[in-house]
Amino acid sequence: TQLLEQSPQFLSIQEGENLTVYCNSSSVFSSLQWYRQEPGEGPVLLVTVVTGGEVKKLKRLTFQFGDARKDSSLHITAAQPGDTGLYLCAGARGGADGLTFGKGTHLIIQP
Amino acid sequence: EAGVTQFPSHSVIEKGQTVTLRCDPISGHDNLYWYRRVMGKEIKFLLHFVKESKQDESGMPNNRFLAERTGGTYSTLKVQPAELEDSGVYFCASSQEGGRYNSPLHFGNGTRLTVT
Image (cartoon, rainbow over all chains, first blue to last red; front, side, top):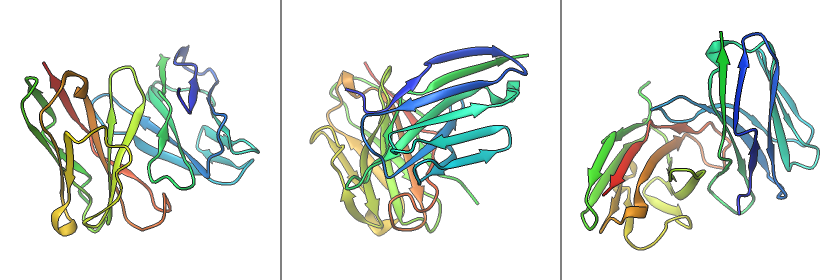
């Protein structure tokens, strides 16, 4: 049973379009992180959200943590080919040292 | 600053052999984590060191896996004897301060292990 479900698994869109990827769980997380991973490299942290309902912006990327701290979304405005990559969400739970990862969303932005 | 480095980047071994993976965290980072991604699955936590002490090893699959961090600097993860299901990408990550994810987690590029 997967604790963090990411959707969609794959997304291919044209440059300039907007998109949203989702990270859902039935469990509550104390914080949630979003990473981006390129082929052959490790995940790189984009943002950490901690408070229910929190919204953080990173240029054209908007991250939101659900009010109940069970889900999160990543919205990209006017996607660029440089946004192509694997986007991973990962949650931290009380009493556990390790992060719980989702399987990721493979995003391709076509020029 | 140099990032988290892992060696080797790739390893192909036969079932029953032994492999040792190495991770050099960012200098000064007390927290060191090992994670693994098996093909088709999500990245999963293996264990967490604070300096040389194992803080949490609840994710270690079985006793064929042994992690060490002597002196609190680099860490090794040994698999002995390796089985086919051990194939995957092993990631190491480090962070500076104590407290769960209070400071950013930096990942290495991983070691891709193939057991044939």
